[in-house]
Length: 185
Image (cartoon, rainbow, N blue to C red; front, side, top):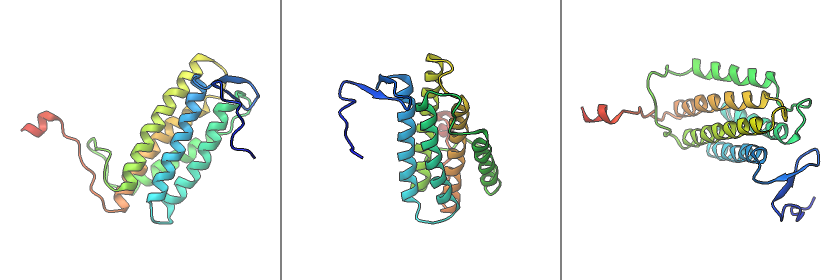
């Protein structure tokens, strides 16, 4: 397989169905950002030196993100690559990890252990991907199955919980955000 095709030299790319679209289209922005998210998650995974549940979760999420990108790029809502079962799996992980940590009672800063910081970064990229997928859906209604939107929404929630969990298992302190008013008192 050749890495370069020269097909995109004039600012267009092909969707799975062969349709040529602008590389600046909302749809390409959405699935390109999902690709970026996958790379950020890869950094988090590389920083996590343990071969445990968190690493396995990150690996599974990376595979699911390829499926999510394919859902967005396919342009065929009748052929979704992510499912409601995938979303239920994300929710189950959120519940399991949350049960193992102290309850969240304050806003926290996205920091701590390098794995947690990378997962917080992944969370923000996930939210951007979600916003771009919503824009793509609004600009071309019916283009793709909206399960991808729900998946990205729930994924950002999971990544937040995973970041907290990474701090928890690595013994890193969660830094509580304080408003300027509270800091000055």
